[in-house]
Length: 332
Image 1 (cartoon, rainbow, N blue to C red):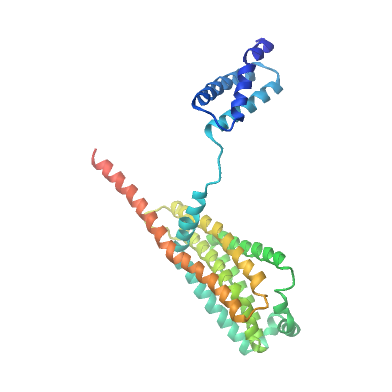
Image 2: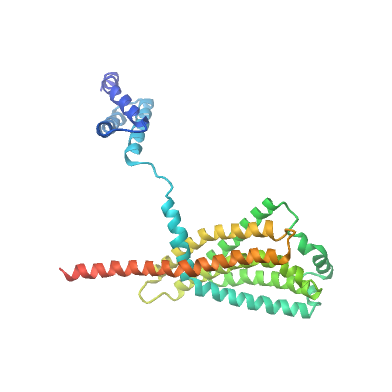
């Protein structure tokens, strides 16, 4: 093949194709022309790749063909509809379907925490076994309150966000094995209960609850959700529903787990902002607790209102598909 003659014959079409790709708007005739030139250029590119030793020419024409293909098929763009569907259907639906699990985790965790906290508060000497007498005194005097002002608020918020998101990720991932989730939760029980028990035993219960409540309600709920959803995935492997195989049950629970994981990123961001900016703020305790409680109740309302609707819509969609298949078969 005479490469120079081939290029001279078709280079005008390639330039025209490149010009059409660069235009913002095309009329009907130009669109037809673009399609025709794209088809010819794709064929010509195939010929050049098989017969031409010139990589620069092949690369140049490849870029033109790719631009034309992108112009004809459209470039993928972020879908706002998909985002809204996730917020209004996907995330709340997954939370609602796993609600028995994370509510049970929350109940057990809360009971254990307050039981151990009460024991430490009634037996101050036990604090030495956990953190030591000097550390306990320092914690009461300044350590606990100082934790919330040690770093700048933006830095502190980012640290909290990543820490809590990582803890939730571990709970979700460890759920398949069941036991590691209990260990992760027990670490949190001990940490909160011992600190709270020490503060109460020294007469600083107001400081402890005044600082931990604003962010703790939402933050701990996020941890409970992650643990509950992780355990649900593990249980789907142990005892799948009768209508599903073990793999299908785990896949279905896992899909909900992915939705929850994505949603918890936003929840922990809100909790981190509250802990970094509201918890240490020089406001009345009642105001700080009110802000945290409002955020927590907003989340629970979001789940209770949208979750059943999303689950019902999903069930109706599945039933409709099954019913449609039945009707189709019955007409044959």
